[in-house]
Amino acid sequence: MEPKLVLALFLLISATAASEYIRPSTRKNLDFSRPSKSSSHPQQVHISLAGDKHMRVSWVTDDKSAASMVEYGTSPGRYSNIALGESTWYSYLFYSSGKIHHTVIGPLEDNAVYYYRCGGGGPEYKLKTPPAQFPVTFAVAGDLGQTGWTQSTLDHIDQCKYDVHLLPGDLSYADYMQHLWDTFGELVEPLASARPWMVTQGNHERESIPFLKDGFEPYNSRWKMPFEESGSSSNLYYSFEVSGAHIIMLGSYTGYDEYSNQYNWLEADLAKVDRNKTPWLLVLFHVPWYNSNEAHQNEGDRMMEAMEPLLYAASVDIVLAGHVHAYERTERVNNGKLDPCGAVHITIGDGGNREGLAHKYKNPQPAWSVFREASFGHGELKLANSTHAFWSWHRNDDDEPVRSDQVWITSLVNSECVAEKKHGLRKILMGP
Image 1 (cartoon, rainbow, N blue to C red):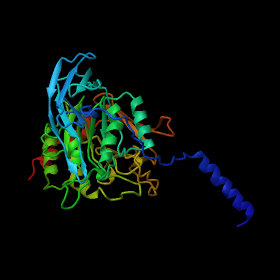
Image 2: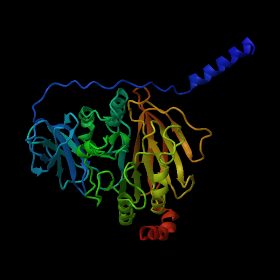
Image 3: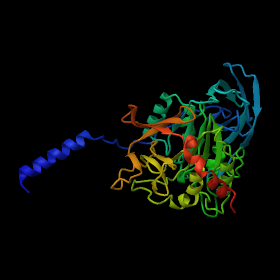
Image 4: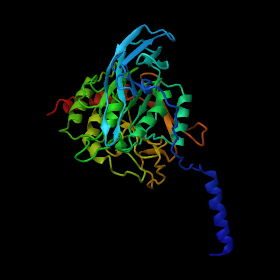
C-alpha cells in the first residue's frame, strides 16, 4: 500500500475514533480504613420495604448482646415509637459475622420523613417513605462492587430525586472474602439507610462450598427481603407493591423450571396482580434474556424458555437485568422477536464492579436492540402516571452525570394486549 494512502487511512481512523465516546478504564477498589467504634455501634444500616406501609431496618453490631430495637418518629431526636425485631449471624470458614439485626417498623405514613436510631443508641438516621400514588421514581443499578466507579455511580444516584433503589444482583463482589460484605455495607449505608433498597441475587452472591456451605448464606443473612410478606418460601424471589407498581424479583440461580417452587410461586403471584390497583408490572432478575453483548451469551436461555410465557401472558411492561457489564435497551420483544405486547428489556449491569466493562457486541445489531454501550452508569425510571413512564440511562462519564439514553414507555394496561391475553393468562395460571 502506498505511504500516502496509509497516512490518509490513519488520519481518517484517528478522526473517527476521536469523535466517539472514549470509555474510561477500571478503577481500584476503595480503601475502607475506619476509626474503631464501640461494639454496640450500629454498622451497615440499610432499609427495605416490608409489606404495606412497613419498612425493615437492618444493621450489624459487633456486640452479640445488642438489642434488635429501632426507635423512630417524625421529628429529629423525638422517637414516639419503638419496634423490636430479630437477629442472626453466620460463620464462614475462619470468619464470623457480627450480630445481624432485622427490625420491621410501621405502619408508616406515605411520602413522609422519619428519624430513627438502632439498638437504643448511636447516630440518628433519616428515611423517606415512597409516595402512595404516582409519580414515583426508581434508581436502578446492578453489579455494583466496591471500586472508584462504584462510588461515582452512588454519587450520581445521590444527586437524583428517587424513592426506591432497585438492584438486579451482584452487590458486594465479596466472592468468599466475607469482610468485603462488611465494607460494602459501609459503602452503601449513606444511601441505603435513607431510601429502601430492593435487591435480588446474582452469581457473586452464591458463595457455596461443596460439602461445607450452602449457597447464598451471607446474602440471605444480611439482605433480608419481603419474601414471607409476598408468600414466597425463599429470600431469592419475592414481590412487593409500591405506588401503583407490582414488582417481581426473581432468582436466576435457583430452580425456575415448571416443577420448581419459584415457578409455582410466580404463577400464584401473577394471579394476584390487580392491574387496576397496580397498572405497572415490572420484573427483575440477574441474567438477561435479551443480550447482544458477547459476554454471557445464552446463559439466560433456559430460564427464558421456562418463564417468558408466564411474563408475556401477564403483560409485563419492563424487565430489568444485570450480569453483563454494560448497558442495553430493547424494543418490546417476546420469543426473540419484536412484539408490541412483549416487555421492554433493559440490561444495567454497569454499576462499577471490579471486573471492568464488557466492550464487545455482536454484529449486526439485532432488530430488537435499540441502544447499547459499555460504560459505567445507572438508570432512572419515573412512573409518571398509570400509562406513561420515563426511562433514562446516565453514563458516569468521568464523574460528570450525562443522560445518554432516554425513552417514554407506555404501559400495556390500557392497550389491547391485556384484554387479548386475559384468557391465555387464565389458562396458563390455572393449568396443571
